Length: 377
Image 1 (tube, rainbow, N blue to C red):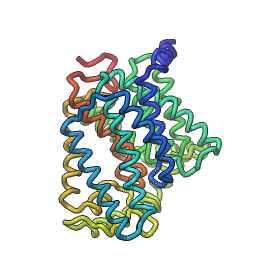
Image 2: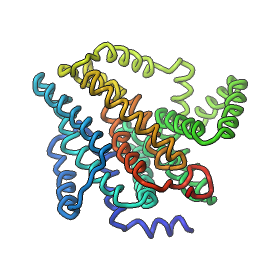
Image 3: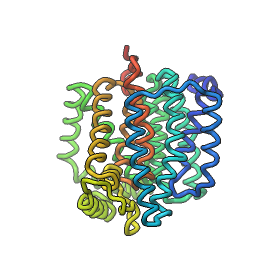
């Protein structure tokens, strides 16, 4: 089978090994870890610098890092003033000792290879990591609270699989991975996939939008019947994600959604023009669940507005110019966890792949369409 030939040809390439290590680190390391554990990624970073001494960085990446480093410095300063070593200082050190070094290696690796190589490396990394962590999670070998991360990894893999040329096994793999995603219990991943699909339909062509509108209208007119069937199926098959989704719909979003709205309302009231050094992302034991708001409150209106405008402009420009690139939609998916989940813990994926988007903008080729059977020229 060509897929297994694809695996064997790319599995032991240096570029894949580096991307896989980075992907594994990204999933595994949390800002709550002890500083001692950062020895491993820092040693990897130093070794990479030693063997790769030709460094370049584009202006947009430089702006991105400036905004991120400013955020880290404000967290660090506020943490020292208030003796908040468990949240703010740890978050700043996570950015400085782990995220920025690892993301820079990722940036360098993506920049020196063509997008097809990057696509293959990410697809293989997510294929191996996704199946591995799903197995560990489903067998109780990792914390059950990691279900959102498991679902997000599987959702990212689902999108990447769409970039394969249309063969029968492509749809088999997509179906299997999507089913595992449903079993993971992650509502967030399902919402992210729907959001990504909507973005694709809006930018692809008028015909796709019309088809989606007709399907949406049919679902709306038969919603009660469809919902009861989905709810019954979810409970009969014990599919965690669908059970969570049907509960949330019946309860107008569920308790978690209501809590998020309360958090957002309180955070908006805390935004000032100047940085807020007294703000802790873990205030009252509740994470912000929106990194834009976390950045705004910590950094103030000026830096917060620059960060918001930069991110939105970056993605709008990329979607407009590279609307057939599967890697763009892979990155867009993580915009949902970035905005609805637990602050830096989930925002790290989207921030990481902002650098991928910056590289895509600099490339003159457009990678394979998300759905089309042919490559774009």
